[in-house]
Image: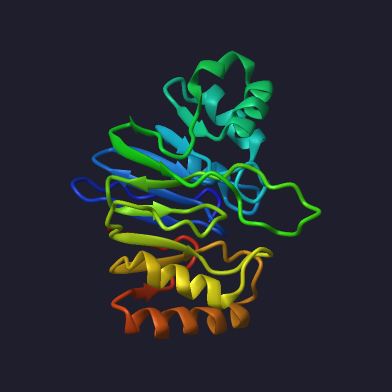
Amino acid sequence: MAGAALPAYAGTMLLTKFTHSCVRLEQDGRVLVLDPGILSESATALDGADAVLITHEHADHYDPAALALALADSPELTIYAPAGVVHDLRAHAPEQAARIVEAAGGDSFAVAGFAVQCFGGQHALIHPSIPVVANVGYLIDDNLYHPGDALIVPHGVSVGTLLAPVHAPWSKVSEVVDFVVSVRAPHAYQIHDGLLNEQGLAFTESHIERIGGQHGVKFRHLDAGASVEI
């Protein structure tokens, strides 16, 4: 979908799914992008963005070259991310350092008209030999929750729409299903799906849809480039 024009919507929040874990939110002319990584169509996702949220430093969620270019092209763009990402991105874009802001679990802030709450703190364990990095999950406007690479259930809030990481080197299907059931969001869509082929993704999603449905969660697959109002 590189180069494709994205529609503008007013009055509702429009979620557009990009490859893997990147999503773009549009509301009342404002644009917020989460996790534009190297597996995603970052340039298209970032076009016209007012703010970006990065959950953690892994390349499938964080593309420093694309973000540095977006910062240079968009003087109002602000990026929030864990400390490690902030340090690295400031090195890539030193002149825009003031617009690269640290976020951590427990923080709350408003950016580009969106209310953001931060949850978690650490990436899920991949292997004991691989260092664990910081990971921040983001709840947007008391509705949409993007957990990044950790199955952290946000406490003290009711999630309306969950973005569920359906497959990763650090998870198994039973853990993902339990996460979806525990969050109990009425609606859920898949992210972190870039490492599966079509058949494998359908197999995994069938478990989430079936068991999640037994607990009141309506899971729906979104193709890359598809949009839905939330």
